[in-house]
Length: 226
Image (cartoon, rainbow, N blue to C red):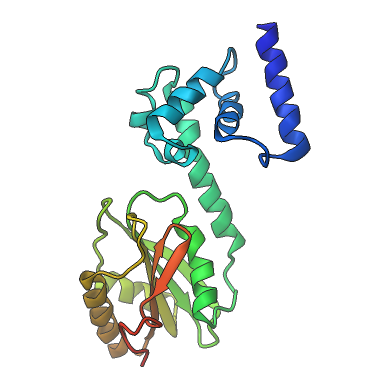
């Protein structure tokens, strides 16, 4: 017990001195497990997690049900692990505050990418802007399976009108890691543009996010801003 406690303190002090910069994945995961496994050696459990899921990202993206199948991982530990990417996403989202001016594709993309951090499902956000391209709101409207998220044109219109938006940017993620638009993405974009035109709102863009990358359908020529 004494040796484990001494090891834990050394790992904590190492983190306090230099952060995670010189930590391998196994050490970072071992440190994290200190806070849900209060006693004993967490290194073997960390190794089992990495063996099962392949990487630190794979561990943090796993579900509670998958994690508790690993020896040494309780429901308490699994919930802590799954909480990490969601906290990171909330942190990133809150750093992007309403009122920011998004007057270019790059600014819109950079603003939206954090909203999809750690997502394993396809989700759809609507970014609402005023006449000066200032952010009025950014709302998640739909959540789908790993492969698709159903989109209700009516709900998008209602949300844009409720925010008093002059223009909107539709954004969703591809969990495949490839940000190229599908034929369905193109059809949805054209249908939405027509519906928004009818109520006097501009569809400024449809952005597809994959990991830390994004593609603008407008800049790629898949539709014309009117």
